[in-house]
Image (cartoon, rainbow, N blue to C red; front, side):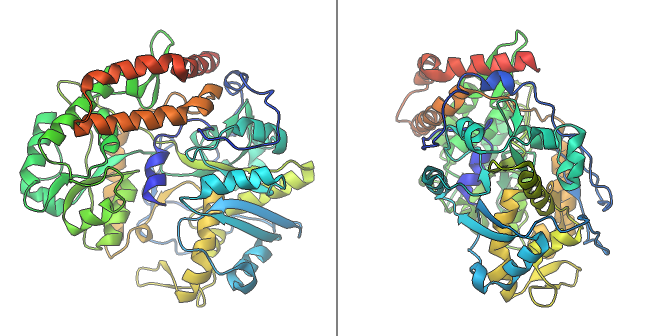
Length: 544
């Protein structure tokens, strides 16, 4: 995924965001979503146990870890899911597009395995937030539509109610066991697909742990490593490694404040207080303290003197001009540094106690990158499409997953010396892009495997990142709003977030004063924030 989308995932909440598109649907659901969404019974979690990882996962977000590729793959699908009909899928890809269906042998084989004639409409990032509303406005909806939580799509509730299939009765509780690969998703995954008290699609699982600073160990060796026990020590280390053509931190200030706010014990986006009220993290005193500390870092000259929206920070870190960059999660940090330099292993900063605060806490991420909804149709049609999605969610270690991800041995991939599949030139042209789109639609829960990390240190990387996840989970806190819905959020959050991030940039850069931060949130109370909080509070009271 692109840097913009990766980092956006950790700010996503519930099912909506902020720009407008024509749905052709009424707005009768407005004002009802927050109450109804609290009552739905989530699918029963039934983990896939026929392939045993070397490092066990947990339902609180610890990833399964594999140190080698399974010697014997298992069959996870009993029969061909499709009925031979035409199926359209709107999804997003994060790599080069595959060869078109007509000239793509692998695509034809996927169609045969799924038992359908699949046409995939492949959006890109950036661009999906324009493609999605354009297709919806056209009226002829695809059979399957991936709905992300962080790309500015508003009126999702009305679109779902008017045009999409309510799959609650097919997957709620034990009913999901008809789709065993979907049943292997945790309740945290399914919460993201709940709107108006109904389940609308198959989730797209993603690492459960959130934003972290990933550091270049070659730079931080000068300061005895990329770790700290206090803000004073962190500031001192940043100063120590800054000099010449090296700066300690990337200049994307809102990401710096986001990660540092964990050290001050700020809420994870939305928090439920003891009296039942709801607090937004940016309005908290702890977040303000993190913003103030970012000002100190700026004055100390440790941020790279570049554009706060710079796109090449990852590369500059690998090249040695930036010491640390914010990543969406720990595994992404290690993967990216290995990609840019196979000998470079990003070191993850564990949240430290800041200025006397002992409530340091890592932020759980959203847990998915969205969900794929199904167009309204007969029960037979909807169940068939659920069977297709169940196939796409085939787990690591299954024959179906290897086929979807790598294609056919000899033609599309070969096994390397460690026994892991590696795509051939043909596989990169035909398989890679299509798999990117299919796995965005839905996939199995995330696992750590050596093949995730380029280079020859894959097993060590799995152990390291698994250990980092264990440390982060010791203090990890959830976002209280996940699984709850606010109509006001879909209406106001996008503009509020944009204005807040602009103000952060201005304050850290010295263009505006810290004294302007609190009044900004007082003003936003009447502009939509108070309404969001009341709606989340109502939903949380009904189902805490």
